[in-house]
Length: 375
Image 1 (cartoon, helix red, strand yellow):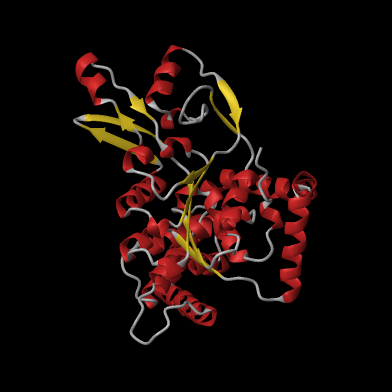
Image 2 (cartoon, one colour):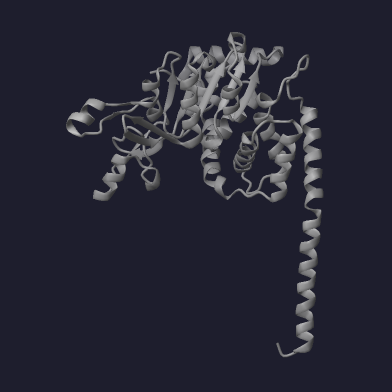
């Protein structure tokens, strides 16, 4: 049995770990692209994230690991079973699926047996990788070397939470909600801008150069290779606590609120960086809500928006000739302050009107009481 290096034992790389955790809180954020040189814990973090998550409750025997408590998202077989009786339930480990670079479209989405459909009128579907990854983590190493069409399919499923397969007029769909993690070494080529933009988050990682931290990495890795079970036990308590925070944040996510000022701030911030389209705005809002939920809060703050922008904007910024496209922290903070100031100014008149209306309503009630003291 292969033992996974604990997520909580990874030294440094805080931004990468934060992006992974927030996508685990709300998989519909849209996935993480980790860019960096070899040996920077990219695949280790992805595998560690899946091991960090607790076992899931699924319909027994279902190839898609359907949730028995959510009838709206069941596959066709489970929906039929619900009509005839109760669904059998079993516990499973959170799936971790490693997608090979050579994967074909049929291997990813699944295949329909057209011959059976024509000859016998039976709809036979052979599930693919997207089915196996439902409610888990799908990891794609060297995603920049994968066929563009396959990458599109992965990103579509990650964004919609559903996989749809259509062949010769026959259609099958099943739930496919997972944390998509892609990694790549930029030295081997980049993704096309259209595909790059489809990843919700992008994080650039580099090797740690501080001698003290490098020594700690050596110590931990050596201990893990000598006795992985004992090493895992040393970090089990931290892993359990972090897993519980993710589950609690998932439950809290839908109750996290935001204001029109927050929306204006996000829009003004992305506009200040001349970002094309509106995907960045949507990603920042989802990420800010996930961050608030992870921190145990029911409302987003400017800090949540700022941290979300750190993950959503770097790979969407336009690179001008002879200019560095990197997102500098001081520039982001400055633009954030200006965006919030613009939001305050934009809503100043609305607030003044609301206060006047409230004051007028109060004065009217006082006048009515004066005219009719008995009420």
